Length: 333
Image 1 (spheres, rainbow, N blue to C red):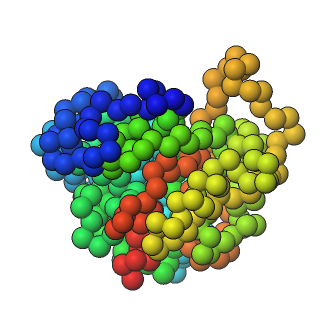
Image 2 (cartoon, helix red, strand yellow):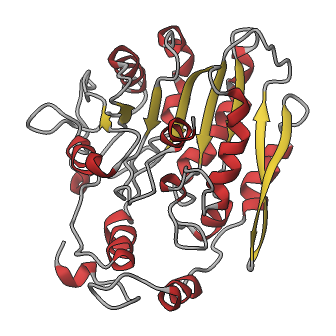
């Protein structure tokens, strides 16, 4: 991407944003879809089969947003807990809708095996505006810290804190959007007063794992099952996912965790054609995991393996902003 394409119309190049620039950025954000119509209505439709609770509420000048969690109806304190989060980045639509689809179509299959806790839309303000950040121009996924400045992150940490030590697995649904290189990474560079550095948009499904608690069998089992319904992002020349290089480069600024992407193998039998030759839309990435989740359940045998599904985080962690909910929980112990 050339420099002109990376120009962002807020702030002065090379100078971090202050309050005026953040206000200018906020004024550019407009509501493009409805959290109530597209998310809350689907949550309400699940109330007859699952326990739904409000675990917090975002309070911004532009409006208030209730935050909902969905739990197994027959919660058994003797069973481990499986946590699913979607929409930590509000613009990553497939994680939100994929989490809701999983609850509707497959969650009942886990009755008596584990307790499910699902937070399908962590960042509803960002969901409505198709925005990665919250109204303060903060990335919720970089704000899982004590006394978090992000309402979204603080509320989610409070929800899961009483269950620490009981999680069998955490599935955190993300998506690499086609706007990452044209909007969100240029905005990040402008906000922080840094040069824009082009990244990569992987073409297909992939996983990011916790390298301090590697679970290669788990990661490869998920990839193998997802490959049955959609394609896996091709590996680079070193046999790594195309974004593993990014995670390695960013790892020095993540205080509590270092993240690497899971191996891309096994690959599907027929690789997808290049983008320029495709005639059909590319499958949604995060949704695909739910179609084969049950077959992977036998591989969830260790405590707290992390699977960040379907997208890379396009933003390196900043000082005081470790990446991800699980990193935040570790920092708060």
